[in-house]
Length: 215
Ligand code: B1M
Image 1 (cartoon, helix red, strand yellow):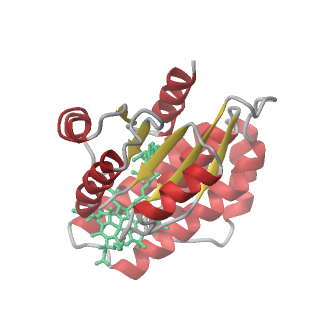
Image 2 (tube, helix red, strand yellow; image 1 turned 45 degrees about the vertical axis):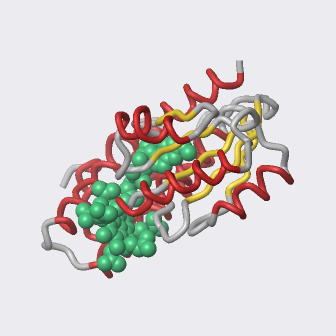
Image 3 (tube, rainbow, N blue to C red; image 1 turned 135 degrees about the horizontal axis):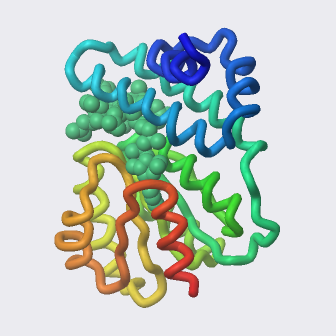
């Protein structure tokens, strides 16, 4: 297979052996971000389709996810970074009950490389932990990620809880993850929170929205 097809195949097959060498060769031809966006993420998309249609079993999905993480970690030092890190601060978390973190961690990388300080809490974070961290680190924005349909319900509950605590004035909320849709966020979720709620389809929209919120 040609290099970029082979890299994509490595994600789908969960094949780590020879990954670094292929990534190094790819870096000669394309920037790190393009490799992630155009090649690796389409591999993950295929994994999702295969899993969703019953053609791939969970342990293999996990292997693909591990290869994806290794690849992103290898590429990360090669990404362009802005000099400033004082544009603002965000807490990022995958919501309660959800273990998916590849997307959230990409958002972390893109924001960190573009001048934001990110407090990344990890996965399965209850709203209390998110709000405690937001308070402790005096963040400007709260970011929640979730990929399960169940997580969209949790996000709604989280926003309701935040509303009850009256923190809408203080924290705009940024939401993302494959199970969300723009209309669900902009219609259903915005309604339950007195503050600002926005939806990011991908990490770059996350960055654009942060820039907008912080100016
Ligand atoms: Co699971 N999983 N999974 N999974 N998994 C999905 C989400 C699923 C759609 C697959 C499918 O059926 N086709 C399905 C959900 C179905 C549903 O809810 N209706 C599913 C399921 C069912 C499950 C389990 C329940 C399976 C089981 O146990 N029987 C289980 C859940 C466990 C739990 O959470 N409690 C499970 C487990 C796993 C693994 C552990 C094996 C692994 C995760 C490993 C990890 O993350 N460390 C895994 C994976 C890899 C997937 C798929 C295949 C790929 C997800 C991914 O990493 N995509 C996924 C299929 C899919 O998404 N279509 C699937 C790449 C990533 C870069 O995209 O996270 O969407 P994404 O992030 C994007 C944007 O969404 C956005 O930016 C990112 C980059 O541009 N974004 C944000 C995300 N968060 C953001 C936050 C922001 C802004 C933008 O601001 C705060």
